[in-house]
Amino acid sequence: MADKLRLGLIGASVKGTWSARSHLPAVQASSEMELTAVCTTRADSAEAARRAYGARLAFDDYRKMIASPEIDAVAIVVRVPSHYAPTKAALEAGKHVYCEWPLGRTTGEAVELSALAKAKGLATAVGLQARVNPALMHMKEQIEAGFVGEVMAVHVSLMREGVLSRPSHRTWQRDAELGANTLTIANGHTVDAMRFVTGEFSRLSAVVATQAKQWLDTGTKTLLDVTSPDNVLLAGRLANGAVVSVHIGAIPFAGSGYRMEVYGRGGTLVALGEDSPQLSEVFLHGAKGGNTLAPMRVPERFTVAAPGTPSGEAFNVGQMYTLFARSIREGAISRGESHQPTFATAVDLHRLVDAIKEASDGDRAVSFE
Image (cartoon, rainbow, N blue to C red; front, side, top):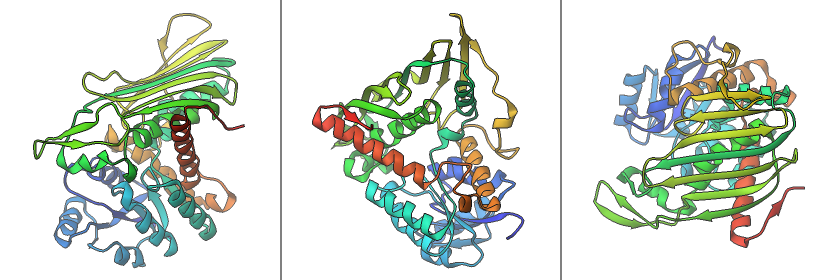
C-alpha cells in the first residue's frame, strides 16, 4: 500500500457545495490520504476540480474511476438519491468507502450496502461527523467516567433559520421521498450525536410536521409545494432510564443553534454550538455537584485531524478521514472494529428514523425493548 491511501472522490466541485466546503479541503490537508482522483458528471468540471485541488486524475464516469488500480478508497459526496449506485459499485470493486449520510435513500438500500461491505471485508465510514467532534467525544468520556453520576434527564435542541426559502440547486430537497430533509439530516445527525454521548432509546413518541408547506425558490422567484418535514419533536426514555426530550426545527428567523443538556444525580454537562454538531465547533460546560456551569477544556488527544485542516465544516470531516485511514491500515475491520462511524452505524440510525416516522404516523409510542 502506498505511503498515503489513494482516494477517489465522487462529487468534486470547485463551487460552494458540501464537497468543496468540507471534503476537498480536509483531504488536501490530510497526512493519511492523497486526493488521487476526482469525478463529476462532466469532463470540463472534473478537469477544473482536478486542477483546483491538485488531483492526478479526473473522471466524468464514476465506474471508470472505481475501476482504476490507482484508487484504494472512494468517497461518495453527492446528493442522497445518488448514494446507492456508486457506493455499491465501489464495494463490488473491492474499494473501501466513505459515504455521506444518509447512506441510502431508504433503510433497505443502507442494509444492502452494509451487508455487502461486511461480506467483502472492506472498511467503511459514514458521514455522521458529530461522533468525531472533539467536544462530544470528551463529553461521552466524562459521562462514562461518572462526571454527572446517574443520568436522569437529557434535552437536545437544534433550531436553524431559513425554512421559508431555498436557492434553486437545493429545492429538490422539498420532496420527502428523496431522503434529504430535516428529519433525516438535521435530526439524524443531532439525535445520533445524543445516542453516541448518552446511549440508545428504549422508548419514544414523536411528532413530525411540515410547518412550511411552500418554499420560495430564490433563483426563479416562484413558490414550490413542500412535503419534507421541518420540525421533529421526540419524547421518551433512554436505555439507562433517563427521560429525554428533543426538538429539531427549521424555522423562519433567528435560530438558537445547537444545545445538548445532560443532567445527572452528581452534575450537569451542556454542549453548545452555533449549528449542527457535525458542522460547527462545540463548546462544553459542566457543573459538578453545584449550580454554576463552567467552561471545560477539551484535551488535545481528541483532535486527530491533520495540522492545517481548516476549521469549521472541514474539521470534523478531517477527523473522519484520519480515523478511516487508520482503520484501513490497521485492518481493524477484520477484527470487527473501527475508529469511526461505519455503514453499520448508519443502518442503526436509518432504523431509528423509521421508528420516529412510525411513532408520528401512528400517534403512539414505539418501544425498542
